[in-house]
Amino acid sequence: MLTYKSYGNSEKPVLCLLPGAGLGAWAYNQVIPLITKKFYVIIPDVLSNFKTIDNAIYQLHELIAMEFKGKIKILAGLSLGSQIALALVAKYPAICDDLLLEGCAVFPQSISKLIKPVTKLSYPLTRFNWFNKLQAMTLHLPPKMDRFYNQEVKAMSEQALVNMLSANTAFNIQNLIPINFKGKVIIAYGTKEEKLIIKSSNFLSKEFINSRIIPLKNYHHGELTLSHPGRFCQIINSFQN
Image 1: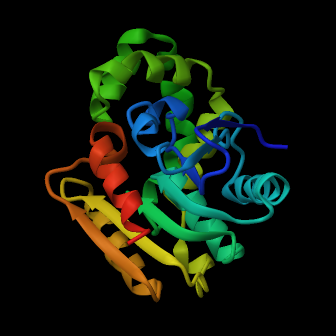
Image 2 (image 1 turned 180 degrees about the vertical axis):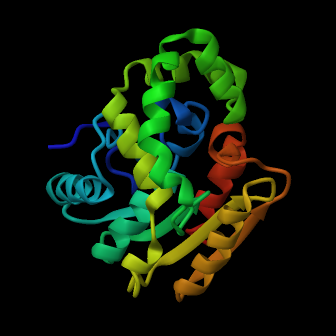
């Protein structure tokens, strides 16, 4: 069964966090001390040996069925993690009460066809600290997360990286529609993100019967989770209002 890290009191409502490609549980280091006051936080290890989104949701469904009687309170995903979360509720609409999607791209990108050859060329560079530091900067990671990112990428196989980037860029919401999830949904995106994310966010806000869209002024991709833990927790807590 899928392994996971857990934080806080297991008697509290369950909040499941799904990080994006290249990230791990460490991406929530600033969030966890704040959010465990109200939630039992789990971070499943869906990315270290990632194959496909279908495989990821199969493992997540099995985990939640076995460990949490088939349902959790909140599911929150970032980037690839948000695509996995979206696919999970599309297949299992009763698996959670509330859903947070951050930086979720829902339309296929033409670059997906180039992922394999480009990754084969660039993967050897991920063995070098300087390259990973440059990548961390382009991802707008806080400097104190550089070493975690470096360790995460170095531990990743070439195939897992190809699988993650392929799934992320080929994701197509048309394969999931109609989505019958009836819970509350918050769609968050940064106003400095790519147009694809903004377009996707607006599309998603119309696909759910109970959704709210939050444009985060001057945020880049992933900055809500990575750089603004207080705001992240405020959004999570708003589900209970």
